[in-house]
Length: 390
Image 1 (cartoon, helix red, strand yellow):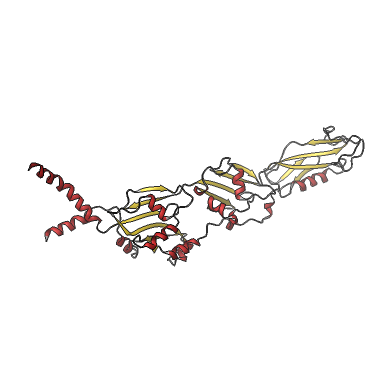
Image 2 (image 1 turned 180 degrees about the vertical axis):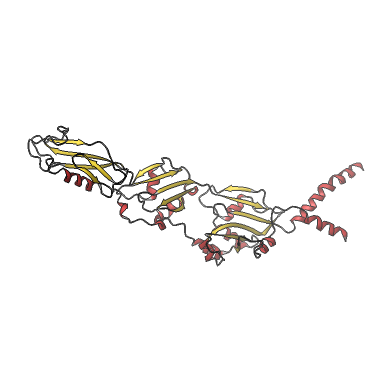
């Protein structure tokens, strides 16, 4: 009678690599052992269906797609302007006859009032920087408000200021350095920097391509868009697959492209504790278990394969789980029973996510086997020595 008690006591003092199934299930029910409030969900086809309807993060929720600043050709503070003025005759600016611009014996198409024998002069003014108040100073015209105007509108204002001082002046304004209509692209792209938007109304993927494209695979790349103090993040692969998320950019947007290789960690009754990279665009739970060698035959409890995840709040609500107020991510533990043949189909459909944690519980008999092996290591040499001495 004493020997079984000693053996049982010895088993209880041996270390474990993690909790058994019953402890996980019981701890989930007690507030004192479950301060995070995690829920346990049995993986079955209904859960797969609910998770399949999960929506990706919405870049379109940032708004701003149809604002007037979408024009992409408005002048603003910091912009550098190139102003060219064409005049009949000698002109105010005394630039002389423009190369190739003299009307000669015919009429110059750029100068509506130029007749035969009339010369045309042109002058490219030094670069003009729009000051902090949004104004520019133009010779013979004075101070003009430039902010909010297009180059065509500003050219018309300059032309109006030259009337009475110049014979039929014609003005062209070009934004040579565009600060107002630019976006910033940074991070893991080949050509980070500032790029100007145009009247083509570039979208998010367009600007990433203009910046040379991502340096890493789309499935391991995350795109963050900052707009008006608000931020949204989305995997590049989802952005490519969801055209409605490829939002039109607006001036002032900041794009951060970040390399985030996806991986999952494994604990419990496996060949070794490890962190494993996805290395593929998509990875199922079945594939993940196969990569780590699956549960160990002599240690694992195949009824108790657990996956720990901080699940999206909306997904948790759809599954009917209690979610604490103000919590964006709900802790969920998915349980897979590998003794049930249906579970193998479910595991093929369950998509792994970055930073998932897989735990394979120890079998209830695992401590006995550990204790038996320990006794064998101690007693075995003595028995062998006794046999040799005989």
